[in-house]
Amino acid sequence: MSYKEDILKHYGARKLEFGELGSFIVTNYGEEGKICALKFEQIMNNMLGEDGYNMAKFITGNDLAKQKLKWHYVTNLKDGIISER
Image 1 (cartoon, rainbow, N blue to C red):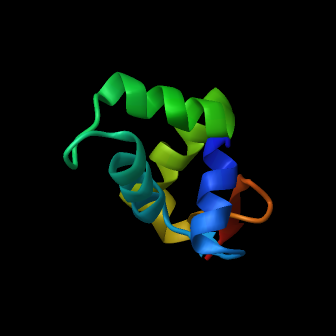
Image 2: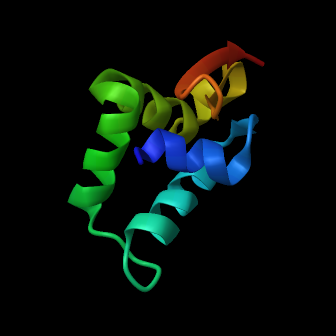
Image 3: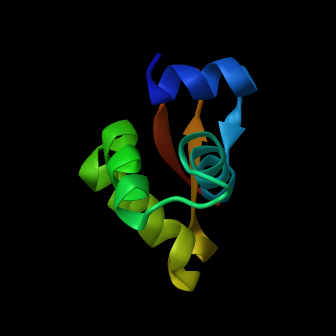
């Protein structure tokens, strides 16, 4: 099963915040609650594409961007979306 399918199976159809998506990845693909940063990045790039992952990090990690934009992973779309606040 793919990462996206695993997430959809676990959560059903809904939106996930970046932190919740990251926690799922660490819990399910890491070891003992930890994951190598390179492996985490590879999984995120696989799921979102390099540009999608970079946008997710930028929007969720930049205070000015967070004031205007929201990023979510939509499980049934199997992709991240950006919307205005």
